[in-house]
Image 1 (spheres, protein in one colour):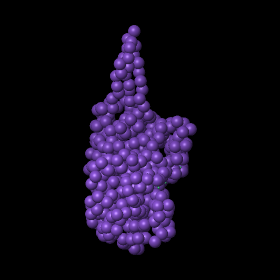
Image 2 (cartoon, helix red, strand yellow; image 1 turned 90 degrees about the horizontal axis):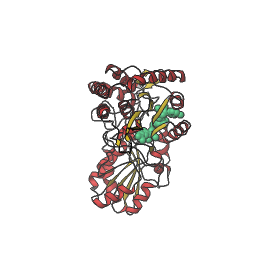
Image 3 (cartoon, rainbow, N blue to C red; image 1 turned 180 degrees about the horizontal axis):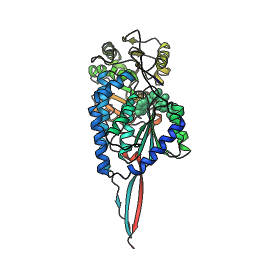
Image 4 (tube, rainbow, N blue to C red; image 1 turned 45 degrees about the vertical axis):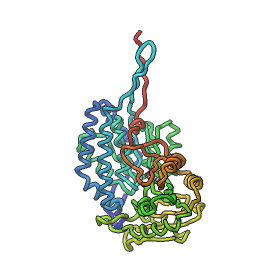
Length: 448
Ligand code: NAD
């Protein structure tokens, strides 16, 4: 596979794609490694994960530059992502000694539960946040005593490969964490079908997620699915309009809109619509799009020519209300774009996954909630208001897994993350993620 820098169109690496036979060999290695890994004492497993986290920290700049070259992320974002991978590993390094069961009172003996690891876990990763999303599956899976095979996205395998080397250097035994670059329909599909893979963690499109869930059902294979989104950013008339408008572009143009949490539907109360749009226009014009290596860059290119065509296709259908600027020449550039379509238009209903926000007015609280929920997705969203009661009512009414009030932040490694409806199944991150990588076993011991 030719790996291309999306900002320059230069080929930065050539990577071999795994075929089904290579996947089978990797599963065999992971199965062998599992027998020993699950027996590693909790303290030693924790120490190995901490050492892995420390090594990621020491190589943070290198990883950030690799992500920049492979995915076009601005250097500031890429550094944050490398730091977040380190933190996710540190957080779950605290888990092995705390992954305890219960003692439940019963007559005639003692009843205890154990959290047993599942076995070999397959983690299938998208291209939008390659190393970060990989760490969300890998860290809790390893902490719980599983072995892991990662299938990175076709376009972005470089940081995943480097992380596997760092894991080995940290002392994780051979076969505990493997990375297999390959084509989704070949290597990814084989992982899903393989009878010795106990669980699949899939992050990607809703379409492929449904296919994986259907295939996994044939073996009652465990799945965690993190899928698409079309999240709403709801601005009430009583909000701090300056702050809300200043923040709104970054809630959707961050990572060039290639973010499952992107607040790509902006709902503005009709009574302040004009006042808000004036502020939004100024904020969008201020977004700095350009060379990812430049420290002041806020938005880079799209991932590929193919994806650029797809995003362009959406925008060609409706005249933009406003477009910011972006570099010309080489690279897959698209400017920050604001649309004001009808709420039935596909730019308002479908995930574009590019720097495009669709704005619509609403009348009152009930109208805002109705529009926000009128989607098969339910990943994230924001509510801007100074009324605490309204903030709570709307937070409870919006059908989404990760909401923020007077903020657009939705991901912290120590809080749960995942989608309602067709945005996903299960939760990652936070204190409960470990449960998704273990089975609860109940044992009764008679004292007779
Ligand atoms: P995608 O579904 O095309 O691919 C994701 C991964 O699945 C890739 O590694 C791909 O090779 C693999 N794959 C493709 N077909 C497969 C198959 N038949 N069997 C097994 N594996 C297969 O998604 P993408 O274009 O890489 O990523 C963009 C999508 O991911 C967007 O919809 C976005 O919203 C979603 N996403 C969701 C989250 C979340 O946490 N909810 C996070 C990031 C991205």
